Image (cartoon, rainbow, N blue to C red; front, side, top):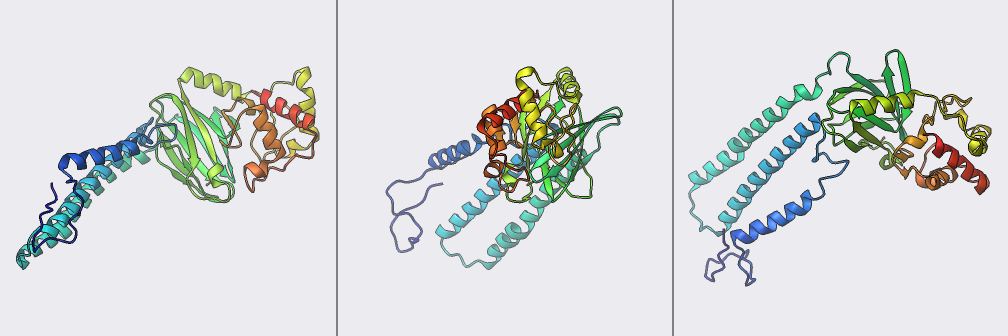
Length: 348
Ligand code: CUA
């Protein structure tokens, strides 16, 4: 389409005065550049548009159908709008009525009905329960961390802030919350489901490729809502089984160099809130730390899992995660914080 910029008595005030005439090619080039710059941000470990699971693939397809459909309709509407600006007044009311009823009532009703049917047709497989005997994981959201339970026969293994899954197998999540409403979302694997205190919601995911992904809380839940994430590792069945067996084991006894850190952990009352399986620390109101050193991140995806970050977290948690219940230990000498950090880091 080309804008007609000829002078004349009927020249519209909307005609651009600039010399450059925009042709179809310019418009196309402009749109593709814009689209490219948008799409380049669609990859990564936390992208619903870079699916690594069946549910996420369906949702990404739905998104693209909606986005492309919406763009085409928008272009038609804008095209008609621009056309109406430049065409001479015809005064034909019958023709106008056809445009209004056809374009304003029939066309949107048809399009919305088609899109709704397409979206609804996906629903049964998105909410279908997994086959009997599938892996089950329960996750409880707290301000601002995740309690995770795996079930191995009659054994329950408690972990925190990191989930591993075997690839190409369905897994059922049983979701609830311990304080306020949170929302469980791993964008690369599927849709999100609310975590509501006193209620169990279920979500089935089916990872289709290995990799490390990121999950997040998707419901505003207080000051540090944005600091409530977790890592998700999708791996082959054998690697998953090795990981789970290791996580089920108790903490290794400290070596001679790490004994001081272990003693500081118990002497400072950390065990009142945190559990360290295999020691006298059996607290249950905060994350289980038995294998905290093996995790990919600290403080629910907030920090790197490194001694310096451990030290910082122990010293000033409220600076890093406002309103977190973790008390600060900045009164301890730097050498003690270092020993504690080294011991925590060793809990692989
Ligand atoms: Cu939990 Cu937002």
